Image 1 (tube, rainbow, N blue to C red):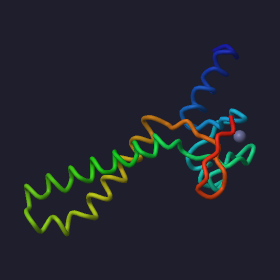
Image 2: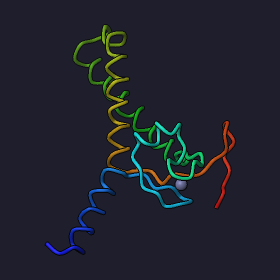
Image 3: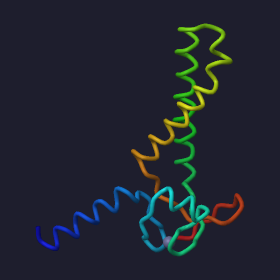
Length: 121
Ligand SMILES: [Zn+2]
């Protein structure tokens, strides 16, 4: 294996394990790094968040899966599921969000502290 091929392969592995990219310094990092750095870029320390539309998609994925879990359970088990099924619906909804995060990594956006979203581009 040539050195060039090896570097190419390493880059590939790196980008799989680190799906997030800082919009300001192009640093690649994982969700774990993002959380550990208190939702900032581990490299340049700028606060980074998911874009609005992406948070909407996550919310819809959660609602769709949780709703489907409640609907299917209600038809199989009956009224008892409306109470029993809630934690399951929440768990499946959460798993659906993780699935979306893994399948379609978001493009992060820089934003200010608090809930004020700034476009720093
Ligand atoms: Zn950065």
